[in-house]
Amino acid sequence: MDFRPSARLSLILLSLASLARGGEPPPPVLLRAARVFDGATLHTGWEVWVSGGSIAAAGPRGSVPPGQARVLDLGDVTLLPGLIEGHSHLLLHPYDEASWNDQVLYEPLALRVARATVAARATLMAGITTERDLGTEGAGYADVGLREAVARGIVPGPRILTATRAIVARGSYGVKGAPEWDLPYGAEQVASPDEMESVVRDQIGRGADWVKLYGDYRWGPRGEARPTLTEEELRRAVEIAAASGRHVAVHAVTPEAMRRAALAGVATIEHGDEGTPEVFELMAKHGVGYCPTVAATDAVAQYRGWKRDAEPEPAGVRQSREALRAALAAGVAVCFGGDVGVFAHGDNVRELEILVRYGMRPADAIVSATSGNARILHLDDRGSVRAGLLADLIAVNGDPTRDVSALRDVRFVMKGGDVIRQP
Image 1 (cartoon, rainbow, N blue to C red):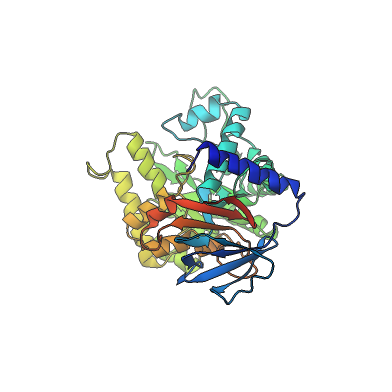
Image 2 (image 1 turned 60 degrees about the horizontal axis):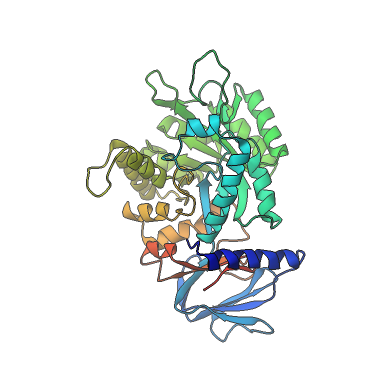
């Protein structure tokens, strides 16, 4: 990402221009690029007409009537939908800077929110125009306020989907310390289906767009991961969320927790490091998306001293790679979401690079971050370059369908028709 003074000034001026319009739609523009990836297929010689914050038309050059639109020729770049990140924590920062425990226990809420505004800007400038934030990890409902600040143009950032406090089984999760102290948990606890129903309703009422559950955690007698929530508790959460038009994401590492979550009807399962071919086949059968978060596993291993290209894979890294391959073999829809916050915001593409290293085709990885995540996350207004959808678009140098690392070289960002970054 580019933090040169000219880039910062451009972002400030564009934000002020957007605010000055008082919510009026941005002026129409005709975008031309050497290549356009529409969310499924790469095209050459296309152009995209943007009007009123939406895509008005897209097709071969000359087929789109420019009307009164300003023509913006982006040059030898690939234009594609803004990326949709499926698993992030904007209110966390990398664990090699401060552990999860220390962030939850010692960092003031105001400090965490200030960091999150910087993280949101870095995320948008990296080409992520939609971010599903799966839990504030001790920062209460700060994600709801951050979502509103971005939506009102107070701070720059992606469109944020909130999960607020996340929900855990009582006694399974939280800051570690002496047992006689009532320490913060970083999430909201439940101990029965009725409590689950009450907490899900409450979180929705406080602004949650998604419900995030921890289906297992490291609470076994030797610190190993074991299931926490029963299938009945999971089903109750799904039932209440569905009634409100919302969906459920579940942290699950163990096969049994993944099985319970899939049978309960959740939308996505996060991590799944111990997933077996059988449980991935069950997920495919029930249409459950999979966020493997391989970048977080990779980052934590490196924080512990692993040198990726010089040493054998640690067991956890090998396990996450094998889980991804089993999911792909079973035909599970893979969700781009790296658990960013464990590593640096703005480095989101790291997840896609590792997915490709582990066996995904670059074009399939790009689909997972655009039209694929739009389907998995039930976002029918974005994720493709198609008339009627939101004009959330980015352009990168090179062809990411051949080399996914091209997504690191972001040259242009548009969100809702507003140009946020341009060459």
